[in-house]
Amino acid sequence: MKERRVLVVEDERTIAESIAARLRAEGFTVQIAADGPSAVAQFHAGQPDLVVLDVMLPGFDGLEVCRRIQAERPVPVLMLTARDDENDLLVGLAVGADDYLTKPFSMRELAARVHVLLRRVERAVTPTPPAIRLGDIEINEAERRVRRDGTDVHLTPTEFDLLVHLAGRPRTVLPRERLLADVWGWADRSGTRTVDSHIKALRRKLGAGLIRTVHGVGYALELPS
Ligand code: CA
Image 1 (cartoon, rainbow, N blue to C red):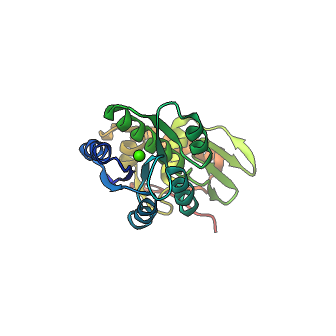
Image 2 (image 1 turned 45 degrees about the horizontal axis):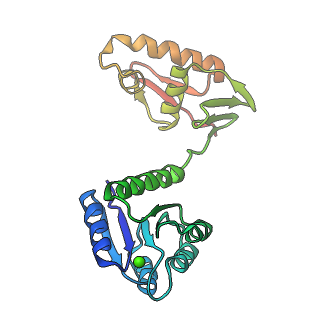
Image 3 (image 1 turned 30 degrees about the horizontal axis):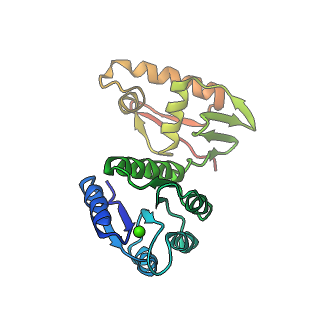
């Protein structure tokens, strides 16, 4: 798993140290900054995946830190605010904080919020696979849709998975046993007729020239020239 870095910006040393200790125990690499200017500098140098940011800081405050780091690169920010300071909270959210915790908070709660924020970001950046184009056939994996000449073609879930599997390795001969194992999850060789019948269905629906039979071996998806 990729190393994940958190920058903790807090001038109260004991709080900063406990946050850092908890996050290190959760597997994060943690850096601490104790004032506004060093927070911005360390953000730039350390490229953290998330920032835990106290509002009240020497130099310039956490809101200004948030403005400056967000201008450099979008990053999830968990803001720490003093109790009942609604104004800080609203400004914090306006300058790009994603979540906040009101002091005092438990380290368990802080760690939970950090995980939630990172998960949200990681989900958001997971790219949607682009549609695969094979001549007049378009395969959209995210929507599990196939179009031929712009018209939807109805495939069964297994036909769809088989097509995507073949399309992921165009021109490569895939043995029937391997297709059976990869698409159906069956390891034994008795079900290769199942592969044949699904290939037949794909040809009927998408055109005979799409998939080439390699006798005695398996199938390969042809790319239209
Ligand atoms: Ca502070």
